[in-house]
Amino acid sequence: MIRLIAVLLAWLTLAGLNDVPAVNDAAIMDDGYPRQLSDFAFFFDDHAQEPNARVHAYELNTPLFTDYALKQRWVYVPPGQRIAYAPDGTFEFPVGSALIKSFGYPADFRDPDSPVRLLETRVMLRRADGWVALPYVWNADGTEAVLARAGRRMPASFIDANGETREFSYRVPNQNQCKGCHQRDDEIQPIGPSARNLNNGTRLAQWVDWGILDRSPADAPRIAVWDDPATGTLDERARAYLDVNCAHCHRRNGSASNSGLFLTYEEPDSVARGILKRPVAAGRGSGGHDFNIAPGHADRSILVHRMESDDPGVQMPELGRELLHREGIELIRRYIDAMPAANDGQG
Image (tube, rainbow, N blue to C red; front, side, top):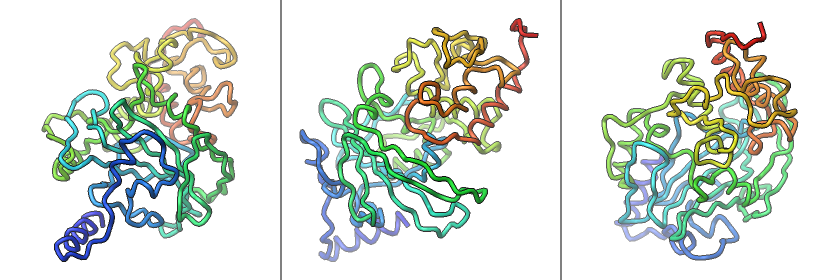
């Protein structure tokens, strides 16, 4: 579908009939915050989320969990610019780039044709002085999204894959909360677009074909799909899940670096990854447990305790979820239980 739209736009241009506006580069690069998502012209049909020319849809191997929301992702790089490939960390995008991500829910996850209600679209804008993150909230009929720098609470409901009705208060983060999750080395940075999380065998080459990435090495790193055993071992899938869902804060240059718990995929120190690591500060967040990860004992692990909590003073991640991620918790439980049990003094 994306390629068909691109071909159609090119044909209309040649025919002299193309009145679809180009992406508004000034809205991305200038000071200030556009009031409406449509001001950027990322889509030639905002309601249908049909991307404009040079706005490309993409997916990640292992995405961040956000209350089971369906997410659609797009990337925009201005004409004449390319992302410089890097094997480690998030790619460095040229000034004028944008990352766009929409969140919504189908009425019924069991029905592939169930209409999706859009709740919000978050944009990250690469300006000359760094990245800016902005949340836009959709109106009831999905025809426009308006800037909500202060965030918002929105009622949400859906029927999940097991037929259970889920009703909850969906939280759109405010601009400072966006900064909290995306901050590294005192700068806002994207989380998802890295070589290892984009690489699925063909996706990096696709970015090169689109003219937005300078190269696609054959030896590019790759992380597993967290819920697909065909893509990696239990250890690899669990560490991919923790990397994407936790390591934007729990990394050596992240906002939770003072915890000493570093969950980046490439972290070599097993204690820093939580294995037989005691918490820096004990409290009710520890659940009375001694170690972040007690090998062979998920029930004794602080990591699991905090993932399973819905107490705002205990739960992890602190932001971005109101619902427990049952499948993610089960993966981490199996990961810990599969570790050889150590003599931790608890018998």
